[in-house]
Amino acid sequence: MAMLLALTACTGGDGGSDSKAAEKKPSTSATPQGPQRDTRPATVAWTTDLDVIGQPLVTGTTAVVIARASGKRLEIVGVDTTTGLKRWSHPYSPGGGAPGILVEPVVSSTASGEARVVFYLAPDKPKGDDTDFVTPVVSVDPVTGDIERRTDKLLGVEPVGSCDDGTDVCVRGAVGGRGAYGNLRVDLGAGKVATTRDGAPDKARIIGTGGLFSTNARPGEKLGVRLEGTTLWSTPAATLFGEGYTSDNGWVFVHEKGPDRFTGLIGQPNKTVSPTRETKGPFVYDLAKQKIVSFSGKDGSVLWARDGADPCFKPTDFSDEADLDVVEHPVRCLVSGSYSIKDEVVTTDAVTMKVEGYDPATGETTWSHAMPDAAAATYWQQGPRPLVRGGKTIVAPLEDGPSSIDVATGASTPVGDDVFLCQAQGPRFEYVTPWTNGQKRTTTRRGTGFVAPCSADGSATSMAPTVAAVREGAVAVDDSTYVLSSKDGLVGYTVD
Image (cartoon, rainbow, N blue to C red):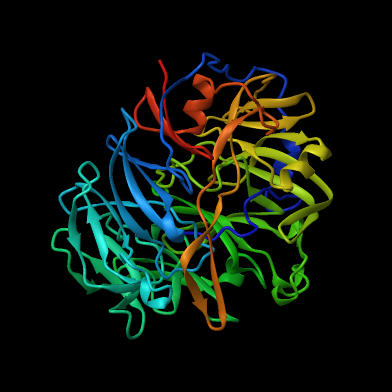
């Protein structure tokens, strides 16, 4: 699970392996027009008053969400997606992972294919020290909420998740909270914990689906792929991205299972971030130094690279598309200029930006649109952005105003007064037990972003969500039922 840090926006600048292709293929913004949106009103079916910290995960007819409980504690809750009634709840622990990792619900499968909600079960009476993170992993039936399996206590230092084969639970940690950390596998059928070859090699961490890992050697960090206990390849991060690039400054990757292809980025060289973290910033990012690299999952060979590029116009905190076969019409952004962060305030300098489609096999540009400089600066200041999930369209501010863009052709249509759903940054919350790293202690963590109605430029609106907005921005139960978390709680919608 990625700690996105500053890598949640778009970068660019001319140059890179396909710059000539970009020159040969001009914008296709004039014709044909982009898709039309369904502006009929969506119906609020139910609401809850849960004090949620992020977006739900839907399995079957249950929406699973994490919410605040009394005493700075958390609970994980199952809600009936038809009625909005609470089906069950349990005390929830975020585990001993770093606070920069988002807190969100997880579902895995048994060997026989049954979906189960999996999490660290928090103690009934927390002590407020590190022993609170030595907990059992439990497996819960999503409909009844019954705890079917409960392991012996362990200290997990990363979120729970499915193993390489898509079943059970694999996590890095120590049984009983003692001894060296290792890769652990929880058999959801038997509830037993055993060491496993699944997961990252020793002294490495997983940084993407498909077995992508990075080692902890500094200098000399390597990236590689490990599946079912076998390391298929590893290569220096400098070979893939260049000297000084490191996952310590964040990572964003998409793995396409069909072509077995990774496309994404790691943090730009440390020398572009000044001064050091201990001096409290500002952190200055030279956008042109970020790059997208696409490489083979089979052997790590570089397929193409684009200097000054970054993924953009995608949800940064939750997505329906984490496990992909292929991305047919991907989008990236090219930017020049810089931005800086101090005390969570973002300042931009001379930012210019283009949004473009590209061929995922070659990296060659297929269409391109320029954004006004003011809109580019606003984008980098990390304001709310419309959610348009599903992979067919994006919404971006162009010279003619906010427009819907068909990602296959680049055709654009001004959206005028259309309503969207925007995702803000995830809410911060205090957890009862501090996370300790040497002498540093913090109780602050973060959930996934709340969603609210907005205009195409990201500004808040009092208009009610439409069918299009709900289908694009909420979490689908089926074709007519959707759920999302807002600052007011969990909300269920129905659409025709």
